[in-house]
Image (tube, rainbow, N blue to C red; front, top):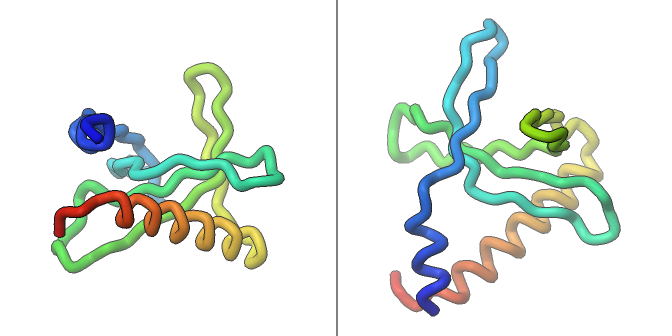
Length: 102
């Protein structure tokens, strides 16, 4: 199971997303996945500059890669959001189930 340990010790994948005022904020990509039966790709990110440790804000985006360009799209459709949330929760549960520590 050393591969799992190495996965968590890799350098974090950081992206920059502009806010409403055009200021770029740093986010760490915690997971990328595709939804079965769809060509869409999704990523879950958390802000690096979280004010307090109690904040577990996770943001989801649909994304497309075009070479080095990364295009993010807000998920505004309730049905799409529900599918993404269920997939994310399933993946997290599988990861948690594979770890004996904690």
